[in-house]
Image (cartoon, one colour):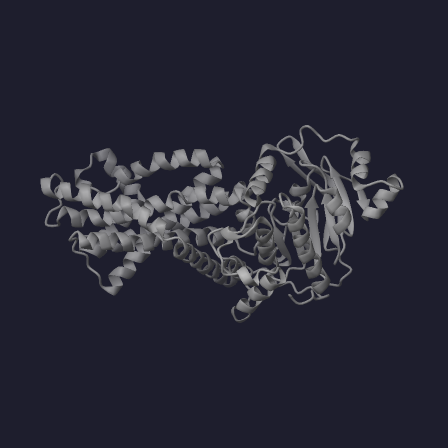
Length: 269
Length: 274
C-alpha cells in the first residue's frame, strides 16, 4: 500500500438517529499528511462523522476507510492507525500525567521495553515533562488538552482525530495546543482530522477544510480557495453564511452537545 | 518526538483466539494497575468505605452475638457474619461501577477507551477485575477490623488466595450487572435509583446475615439464584472453616461472571451511540 491511498475516505456515508438524518450521503477524502478541518455549527454532523471514522458508531461496509482499511470490517486494524482526542476533557484527574499516558501506552500495546521511553518522549513533545508526576487535577485546561494529545500520540498513530480540541480554552492555551499539533505534524508527517466551529482557527491552522451543514458537505477546499470564491475580503464566516443561508439552525446541537461543551468549558475555566 | 510515519502501511492481521486472550489479560492488568494507582493517590475512600462494614460488625454483629437470636451452631455469630460483611462491602463497591461508566461516557473517557484496539469483552472484563482489585483492598481493611473484634479468621496462603478469587469473581459479576443496567438505562440518576433498589434486596436475599435454613421457602429460592450467596458461602468456608461446597461456589461464580461480562460487553456500545 502506498502513500497515495487517502488517509480517510468516506463514500456515500449516511447515519440516522431515529428519524433524524445526522450524516447525509457524505463524500470526503482526507489526504495523507494534511491538517483537515471539518467545520460547521453544532448538529452539522461533524461529531457523528468522526465517531463513524473512529469506529464508535457503526458504518456500512465500504463507506469509510482509513488508509484503505475498511472501518466496518476491520475495526481493530483501524483503531491501531488512529489517535483520538474527544471533545470533553477526558484525562483521569486522579492519576498523574505520566500514569495517564502510560495507561494508553499499555492499551495500544506499546512494547514493554519501549514503553517508559515512549511515554517520556510524548510528554516532552507536549511540554509536560516538568509536571508529569503531578496529578492531572492540578493541570490547567490547556495542560489537560496537551496531556490528552500525549495520550493520543503515544502509539505513534498515522491519523490523529481531534474533536473540537480547543473548545473552552483561552487564546493563549489554544495557541499552545495548536503549536504542539503543528510541530508534531511537521516532525512525523502525521495526518490530522479536526472538527471545529471556530472559523478563524480553521482558517489559520488547516490545510483544507470541509464545511458541513445538516449532514452534508457544502463547501470543500483550502481556506483561501473558499474565501476567494466569495469575494476579495471574505472570511470563512462569510463562506459559512453563503453556504448555509446565514441560518444557524435553531434545532442544531442537541442537549447533550451543549451539556458536553459546557462541562468542558467549566473544567477548563 | 515519535518517528516519522512510514510510507508503507504495516497492518497486522486480525487477532486469533490466542492473541485475543493475551490482549484480554494485558488489558485486565492495565486496568487493575490503574485502580491501584488511584487508590494510592486517594486513600480516603478506603477509610470512608470501611465505616459501614465496621458498623455492621461492631453494632449488628456484637448485639446479635449477645442475644443469640440467630442460631449458627458451633460458630460464633460474629464469625458467621464477618464473611457476609466482607462480601457486602465488595458488593457495595461493585454495584455502583455502572455510575462510573456513565461518568466516563459523559467525560469522553469511554469513547477514548473504545477507540483503542481493545475488544469490548476485554474492556468490560478489565473494568470488572479492576473493581475486584478495589474490593480485595477494601476486604483487607474489613478483615483487620474483624480480627480486632475477635473473629477467628483462618489465614493460610491457599485460603487467602481463594478469598481473593471469590471476591474478584463476585465483584466482577456485580460490576458487570451494574454496567449492564447502565447500558440499558443510560442515565446516572436512573442507575443510582436502580442500584439502591437492588443492593439491599440482593444482600438480604442471601446467606450473608443468617443461615439459609431460617429463610422462608420463597426467599430460599431467591437465595439459590443469588450469586452473592455462593460468594458468601465460599468466603465462610475459607475464612472461618464453615461447611461450604467450594467447587459449586467457585463454579457458579465463574459462570455468573463470564455470562455477565458477555452481556455487559454487548450493551457497552449503547453508551457511546447516543
